[in-house]
Amino acid sequence: MTPPAKPTAPQSLAGIPVARTVGELRREIAQARAKGRKIGFVPTMGALHEGHVSLARISRARGAFGVVSIFVNPTQFAPTEDFNRYPRTEEADATKLRMAEACDLLFIPSPAEMYPKGFATHVAVGGPSEGLETDFRPHFFGGVATVVTKLLTQVGPDFAVFGEKDYQQLLVIKRLVADLNLPVEIVPGFTVREPDGLAMSSRNAYLSADERATAASMNRVLMEVGKAARRGMDLRAAEKMGEEALIEAGFQKVDYVAIRDAATLATLTKLDGPARVLAAAHLGKTRLIDNLGI
Ligand code: PAF
Image 1: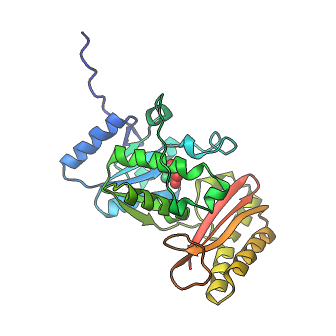
Image 2 (image 1 turned 90 degrees about the vertical axis):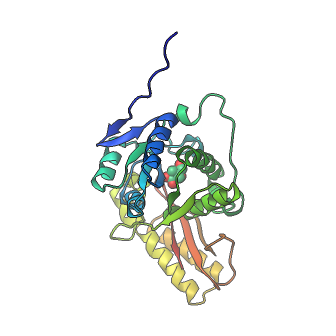
Image 3 (image 1 turned 135 degrees about the horizontal axis):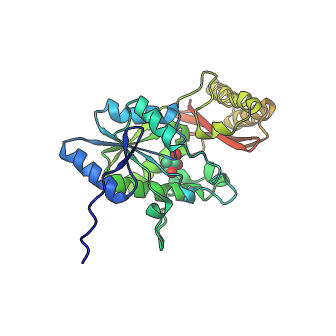
């Protein structure tokens, strides 16, 4: 009888150990826990920029063993979307994390590791996933909720960091974690912006030079909408003004400009508490989203 294969030591990328299977991941995490370390986790789809790195730095700032996953999750893309062209830049991603000393372990599973043959479970979250992104990408939050549930149970972190750039996603994950009693703290990370205000996003890499110049106006328009709403403009009129300003700036199609309750994303008729203005719009073949607290 052949003896069982010995566990293999994880490979590394740019000097960071890489687990590619759930078994390798759990062994590395058990070793860190045995040394008394808390575990911090940042899930990503790779193509990392300073926004992701800032989320990963939170694990370090909290003295935790920092795990970052890179997995371009097929279930959150519709067949018409950019799954195939989504940038895959593992080596460069690892180098950025290494330079920032922001990661102790990378988890880079294959699609077959995450969705083995026969996989038949789907996690659906109601509440904050209704409307906004779901009106335009109905498949999206189901795919995100399913993969994030898996990642959180695979990694078993003390806390996981999600960027405010994807604000509706952040609220969906908070709802999911509360509803399923997952023993993990969800930590929000601020949006990191380019000097002209454009929110950092892996999809910015798709923009031509002209589109890139136009893209910065999304942040400006959100600020104007927020100011108008705070000055007392009717909220539906402020949203309409924002949609028109985006088209005027050069966006071809606006999916929404919406002023919502910051905790629930419920539609507001007046501003009497923390609110958020959120937008999604198309520039050439690229769909950009952004949001601000108002
Ligand atoms: O925000 C993202 O990059 C993705 O939606 C996430 C949370 C990594 C799930 O695939």
